[in-house]
Amino acid sequence: MGTWLKKYLDNRRDYFTSAEYLTGIKECARNADDCDFLYQMIHPTGLIYGCPIQLPYGKAFDDFTLGDREEIKRILLENFIHCSIFTASNDYNFPVDPDAIVLNIGKFYENIIPEISRNPKAVELAQSNPYTYIEYILHIRTFLDDLFVENNFTGYFFYSFLSLDIYFYLKWLKSPEIPVQAEFEDVLATLLKLFIAAAYSNTNDIKRGEKILFENFIRAIKLPESKEKETLKFLKGSISLDNIDLSAINIIILKKICFDIILMVIWSDNILTLHEQRFINGISDRLKLSSQETEESMAAIQKFVYENWDNKVIYNNKINYRFLHNGLYNRLTQAINKNKSKILNEVYESKELVELLSKSTTQDLTTEEKEKVKSQLLDILKTIPSLAIFLLPGGTIILPVLLKVLPRQILLPSSFRQKKKE
Image 1 (cartoon, one colour):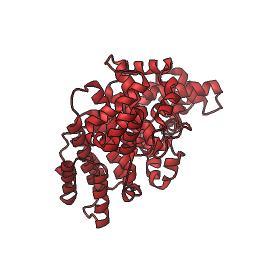
Image 2: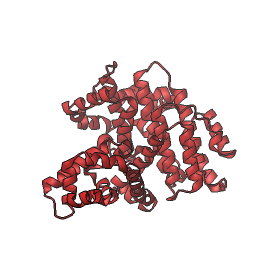
Image 3: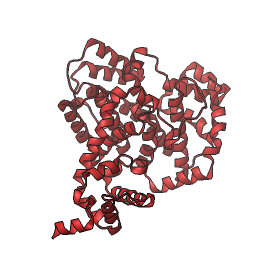
Image 4: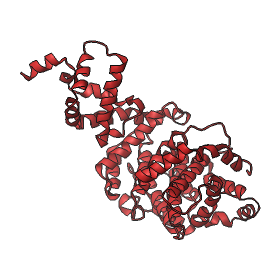
């Protein structure tokens, strides 16, 4: 520790100060609200699911080495930098220099987790070298010191909870004079209770070993003593969604993050029972999520797994994730069937598209014609919100399924289709 942060900032400085990057962030600040910005930034990284796949905005990890838990540290660090520059782009008074941004992270954690900065070692580092101080904070925040928790499914979700740090960092940036510690602790405690209730939504029979695992997980999150006792008491009582106060989760981005984590908990055993589906419906209702928002979250998880099927994190757990991987096709087919009339109306509006689809049934299309078909179909799908979530680059999933689901008459030559109308 104490060797990597300054080198890392020097390594990434050209990226964060490039005209292309700054123009993109400013454009995002003009066109996206905080919820859209955060979700689009955090979700592809895999942090919400405890699977560190890549850096924000689809940037692959390079060979720069930070040591233990390097992916998690880098995802946190870069999300913090993105949040800071996004905030500055909105004309808030905040430095845009990467070094100044990173050194400000210490002030944030002193606000929401004061115990970190009160540690004698942290005090010493803060006085001697601010960079080693930030390294120490990131080390403490990402350090899971319980092997029992780490080697079970709870190990993944320990890192999922770090998504909340990023939300509260952006909130703190915009109003640093307003304390956020109490709100942060309330949201953490509420998510922990939801996590426990979701894990046992299919049964009330909690085995002794499982209870010990959850007790250790609660302690690993390092809540203040009063909140920790409250959550442990919940574990020992009647574990039910009805017994959880969800008032702390009152912002749409918090709802989306928490709902995504809970979905992953329920789906982590590779099946979805009737009781678990009722729990999903119940939490969706309690959080006041629309049916479209609920559907988008479900599809987003499956899309994430599909896109990263060959990544080492997913690859090493393919048995657990196969349910999500295969489920994407079923969900996609249902969504297309549900919107089939809208799709058909849009297709029939384009004479060129209809003719090309018809031609494809009797002869091979040229490369240019195939690109026209693909482009026009994807443009149509982008206008339907419930299908837009499935649009991977190039339409690699949705187009083959779409062409199977569309009525056969649209693929027939025009002469056959005219006879059918007559």
